[in-house]
Image: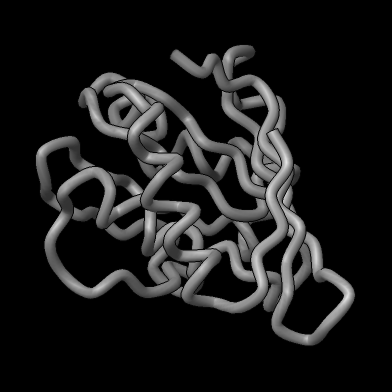
Length: 141
């Protein structure tokens, strides 16, 4: 699936629509450059999953948790050196809790991701505000 967003509001709306295809236990592995819009897309995921609270980047906390119809565990791997550090903060426990794990900078912990992770690449588009979002590994039902 490939989508072109023209501005942050459309990126967030795409995230909300994408959430309709997610199930408890899914892992969404984000890639994209700094400032590409991964957190904006995650805000939409949170809204689509029925989560409450303000969604912010977990760069300094590593993970933010949002309660909702389906809980969202929002990870930012930018500051981690390896997947060993991810396991140290309880990655296996998060996977077992039945929420959706959204993982920014997932390429840094690729060896810890399940083989059925849904991959979402967010790339800058032709304008400063536009983004090209490519989703693989998602079964549309």
